Length: 507
Image (cartoon, rainbow, N blue to C red; front, side, top):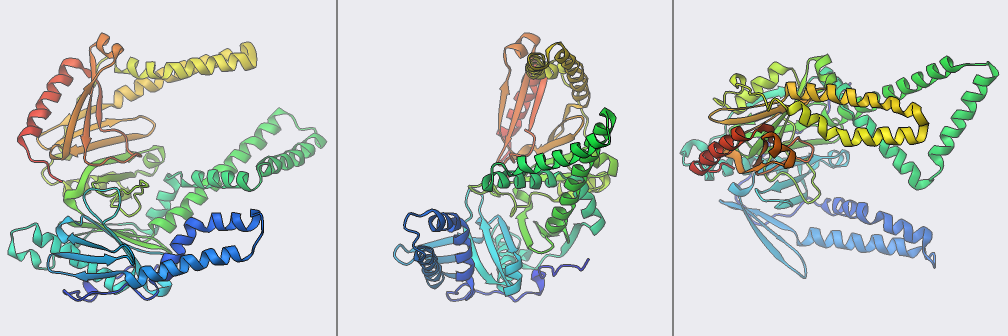
């Protein structure tokens, strides 16, 4: 497989100095137009095919209006580099001027789609601490300008937030992790992204033809079972056919997962330059995301069944100010190690959290009745399953009572693995059984504490301690210590509260 054309190193790009107002790339209007068409293509198509008058000029008029809008955005958009920050002017009737200090820009992303690479341009996105929307999205710049501006923001931001005069010097770039093609293939085997593709294809097919999936399965069923009846197949043959079909679907899902992993993570590199981390990845579309180490909030270490079979783990991190109004994480430094050996993950954590004592944490067990508490949370579902099965299948449905035994077995496994650890710098929790996870954060990054206990918890003397940071991923497990002895939970909450009050919050 040929190696993709990587995004050039910013060290080799042109140096950007304070200047007069600059324009975007001359082809930026085209990319703005394409972005707008993505939002309005569905209404235009519906108006063309289902409109009452069927006037063929309406779609052309709509595209023309969007083209004029994109051209006006290009003509009125200006940006300039100053000694302390960027100045961006935009708007025709309603004009805006944005002043963005370098020190307030915490996440910098440079992205190249296939079309970007054909034109030699890139999209630059700047995120601040707050928020839900980016401070600026430059669509699009010349590739060398985008890299030079990224480098300028990194170095000027460090210089403004540091009293060390030597901070203006270009720090050395250190590679922390690089994924080989073999590691990317392992990542594809581990991930379940192929299932999402099949589910999306199913949903899309039902939109175009609600009966299309049903017709496909009916056709396959008639062909298969008709052939089976002709050869007098029995239950064993039907079972073998069903098993082979399931295996084929699983193989297809894994194949799709491998393809998606190659497209997204081929050429993955995690580098460190000064106090900033940069992730670069992608086969056809390349992306480059950069964030300061101080923006890293909470960490998640995952280990599923396939991880254990391949002796690998995955490391994720929540970054403050990395999300947007749509909750996207693609441009943020969200996966410093999509896949790596356990030793490599531990080394990376020790490097990024020096002197935090990750490898020497002392883990504590939960309440002795935590297994019962885990089990009781699954009882309503188990009862509903038994009732539904008995109502539909009759007395045979009572066999689903075995699910209660399985639920008790799983609850005990969860309780055996669950625990928490705390030292002078870190607070960590672990959980799971079939798929395990470790969730941890620096105490200086905690923002709030919450102690909760329901009626059953109060009866058994239990409590749960919730720990909040500046940013939390919806896909990550919560940072909480569940099913503690109530006295232990209260003492731990009071101790952490005193520490937070005595320390300055580090963003």
